[in-house]
Length: 143
Picture 1 (cartoon, rainbow, N blue to C red):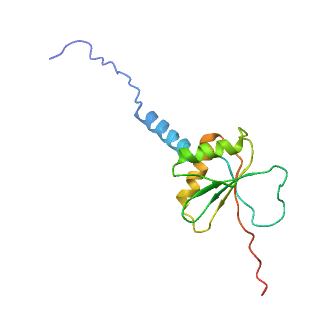
Picture 2 (cartoon, rainbow, N blue to C red):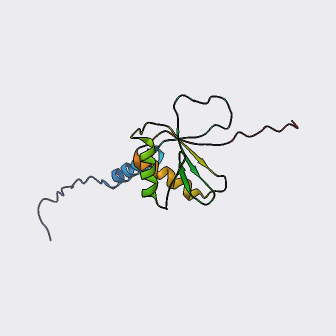
Picture 3 (cartoon, helix red, strand yellow):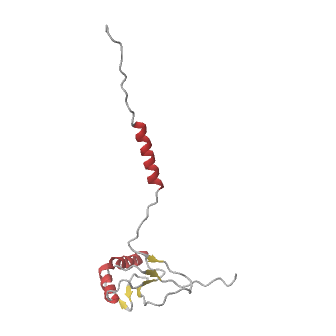
């Protein structure tokens, strides 16, 4: 039996679990609601289908892709296959001018991979002004 002062000391304790829960909830809220900006390595100018507003000032370097996936840079055919050969021919035709606009003229039935390979080669060489050539569509005459 304990005789003496029956005085108990209350020990105070700060419970941090609710504080951690609130902080994690706020962190998840801010992470999920923030927008993430994706910086593309290569800027692509999407083509206009109309015949108006065309910039004819600078002569563009033209890369042509046919149905079988063969490449021509300007009027020079690219011998062989592979991205390294394509990069060499592009570099020869560009004469070191990487600010020059580039137009990719791909056949409508060419594979997507062929166009992406041409764009990858241009991106690795440092070209940033790319466009894909299209033909303008004729409006319906019935309307």
